[in-house]
Length: 152
Image (cartoon, rainbow, N blue to C red; front, side):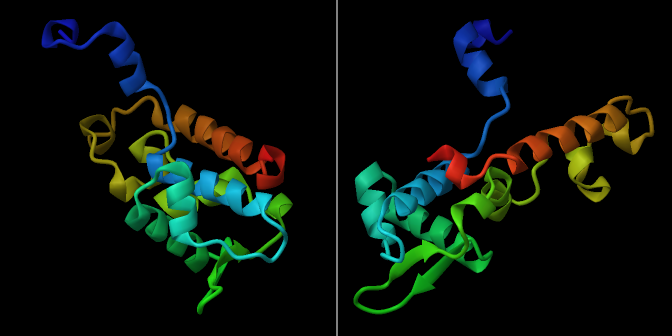
């Protein structure tokens, strides 16, 4: 069916694998860039966006969200911008992903019962919810165990 629609097998693999959102990727890119700068030196959204060919509006939103959640600290003014709010060893990949995308969830019913709209769950015949709760916990634990310092 997929191949009949013009998709190649490689396209199907890309579409079905578990992956971070583009915004989360941009957040990690920005944090690594900020970390590479001298301690306390601010960095603007424009600077990161231009350096890594990211749309400025999107980069600004990602940085603002991380500042709102306490990952970054923002400074106003001529030399304003963003700096890390906490040491890089205390910022996990899970922190970044959840700041930008919300709770990490690999299936809807694991994120929250109210959010799951699948017919199997709502009719009480779902047989993957419990195993995925365990998988979800291990996946989040894995991402929580990787700090920004580990990525540098």
